[in-house]
Length: 114
Ligand SMILES: [Zn+2]
Image (cartoon, rainbow, N blue to C red):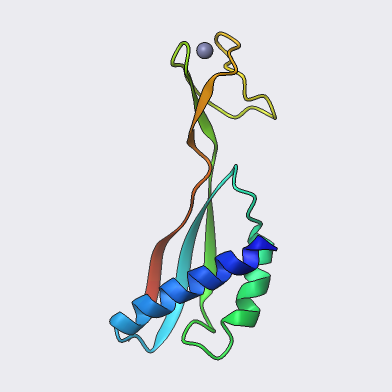
């Protein structure tokens, strides 16, 4: 359900941007979603079609890019990618790990027509 709030937020940002750029149409929106975030592409797409209706972004295509999760061990400083569900350090087995990437959600770029 939180995808609705997120999608609304994306719409507000792109409309604000399009307004400043005096765009007549928003054609593409590039979104970056981290593997660890619980955001589901299909849900964003679903809400988008409802809330973007009758706005400059109505025809916009949503392009999703996933970022894989990576971690750094706080004990031996090994940097590694998520392997299955194991978040423990593959080098020393420590569970004291720091998330380096995978939690992001942001708008990378917007294509508009003026
Ligand atoms: Zn380690």
